[in-house]
Image (cartoon, rainbow, N blue to C red; front, top):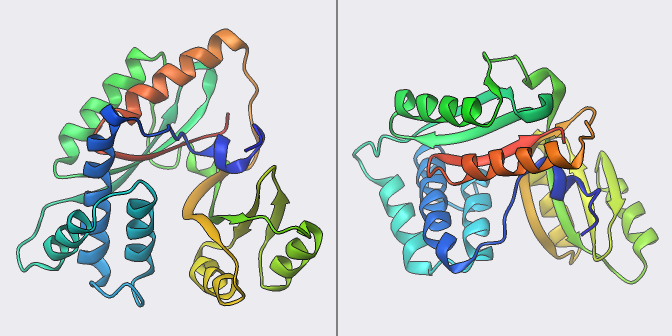
Length: 235
């Protein structure tokens, strides 16, 4: 993927190596459990759950793990996980949004604050950074041989923005239309590689290499936390 890709720049994502796989599974189990609790266990009617399960399949999570997470989310007892979004500024004034699933918000905010401070940033109040981003649906579609025709078709299906990449096409949608447009693309035989609800920065900052390295290390530290589900920046 191009270095300018929305997918590769707005969301801090790392290749999952063997030593990270267990941590990735832990995060995905939480996401599936919460999605199931909030919207039910039916994949067809619960789009949030469908997205979480698709992510789990993409990293080869065993079906038994997925099924157990769904069963847990469908249980009578409360699993205790809560969703939270934290905002702040990382090294070099980089705007950062952190999505969290936690069973203890006080612990999470304390640990995240420490990572911000240690990395040379500051954890802000709600709304201190969010205005710099737009919430959008984002999909990565396998590129067809006639990419120009494919992109025109995607626009006709209701996409807000379409961009061609080296081996895929990025599609941006309104957040409330992601499920609808995803379904239309699949109905026409399109192969969706990834789909998610994300924060896209309204503008981007460019940093010197030395500061860039600090930002990467900072986001690595955030990503290493089990509670952290996703990290977005305007880098």
